[in-house]
Length: 288
Image 1 (cartoon, rainbow, N blue to C red):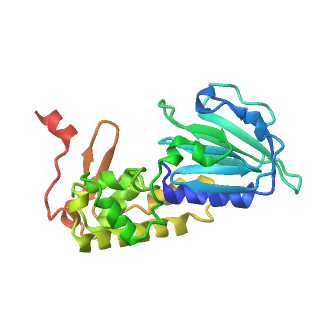
Image 2: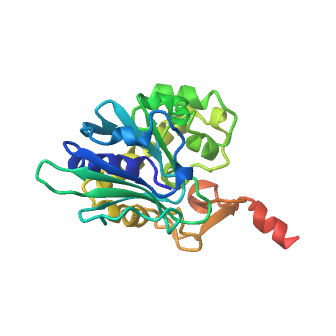
Image 3: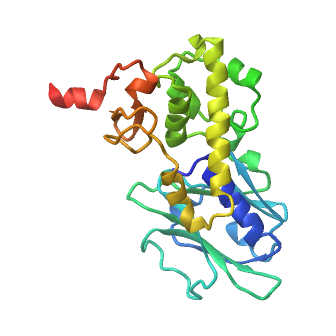
């Protein structure tokens, strides 16, 4: 799933490539992707693109006061093309959900596609006058790169959730997902199962610094990258996430995994849990 660094890089990419252009035809290849009907998506046509923004993990394009907002979910992505097909896409064929055409001042006619891999279609698109009209944006907590350390400490003190769950709770803190929470906790050397409100003050400080450094470094690596290369850039920067069975780059211990119904997370026992192997509920059930 694209998280804060990738969505920020996509917003910057759109600022560079789409701002100043005029929206042309908008092709809807999957009706299920549209979560609003008023104003209609056709109202975007003919509007100047005046900005692009990120709200947590939501990506938004400002079309002269009318916003096209998307949440890419787990399998979604934005793909830019300088030479899009002139023929409208056939609904229900392939991963394409939405295509937005543009006319640039230079006379070019590029477009971007919103695509979604996999069978579980969760990519969502809204057309609104104000991004706060999108429920997922309205309930966001402070942005992970904007929150101050005292605010961060206060947020953690309000919940008894495991710190892994607290970091990915968008109503508590916006922008961090499964992958970067693994990296943040590994960098801070904190167990994913630690309780948020009982973290000692010194560990809260270390965790805050780790969050800032991991996300800031990822943003810096991502900015300026072609949209097609962002996924590879994200993977290349991971030290424990999605590296189950590989050696930890810090201590050399084997990176371990805890699995749930639809997702999993990774950690290093030596770096984060004093050598204790965390219970993997899915594996425990298989071994019974």
